[in-house]
Image (cartoon, rainbow, N blue to C red; front, side, top):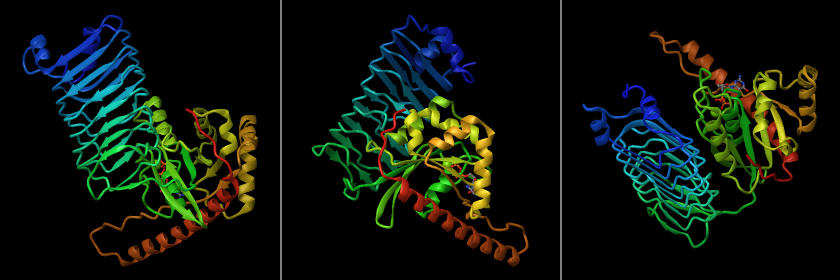
Length: 410
Ligand SMILES: Nc1nc2c(ncn2[C@@H]2O[C@H](COP(=O)(O)OP(=O)(O)O)[C@@H](O)[C@H]2O)c(=O)[nH]1
Ligand SMILES: [Mg+2]
């Protein structure tokens, strides 16, 4: 049973109102159950009202969630060998976390509002965002040879940072105190630019074309576009670009309706992106692929004043160059329901674009097919041109509407 479902064993063994300490080590599982037992798979520790301390050692869990434990002050995870993701949320008294020396691949959704100290050195983490931990003072993430992205944009109190021996090449410390003590490798470039940047947040459902839109706007291929309708964006990514003398920063987010993740996690990951720009957002681009009503619901994650700062972007609209087609579509959307009409009225308009794929694969049959390669080249050229047209429509619009900023709350 333990091999497959540690949760059932856990739920029978520990009581939500009673436990003050949960202490599970490989050795004591063996004592209870004998043999070579260990905990495999996922475990959720949720709603323990009196829990003060969690000590887990040498377990083979792949995913761990600790949620809504109001008294929890200590979490000690050591020598985990298979942990792929850790999720901590709604534990207001938890100020210190240490999971160094774990085979941890992903540290997602670290939403610990009062966290002051974090040690996640010597792990396998690739990307780390501390934006939902605004009170953090000390961060040790050294010896993480796979770490290529660190975001501390919302960490205004960070006093100490050790990020030596990582893959990081640049780090933005613009919102951290000037007096921060930092230990880093000599080739890591620190930036602190406080240039005026207009921030653009892209939201919408999975597969609507958000990452593609981010590529089109930035004129790059840095954002991962999904193939076969499977979303590749698991967290937020951002990039600064310049257009006609104005600096913009695009923030691409995970799609709502991602079937692999519960809504709470999706919301958290969007929030990580939103709080990575504490200066505020100039415009939200709500990407609408097919289903207007579903996609518009994404806006419900934010306060109602978001509408004034939102442009609806209808992607995959091949007739985007025909004003008549766009007007007709707008009319149809308005007529669909009174709510739709109201939303369209409150937003900064609907922009129609088409951003067809440019990562078209070659023919991989046995015989050399030159015609096929020529077709592919021609397609890519046409699609690139279509994207350029979309880009100029979008940027012309942004130039007009990006006048003020809003601080989004989630
Ligand atoms: N033809 C066309 N395909 C698009 C457009 N936008 C996105 N796609 C395709 O739709 C799929 C999902 O796009 P992606 O940007 O990864 O969606 P995301 O999940 O919202 O980030 C990919 O296969 C894209 O090539 C568009 O405007 N036109
Ligand atoms: Mg995406």
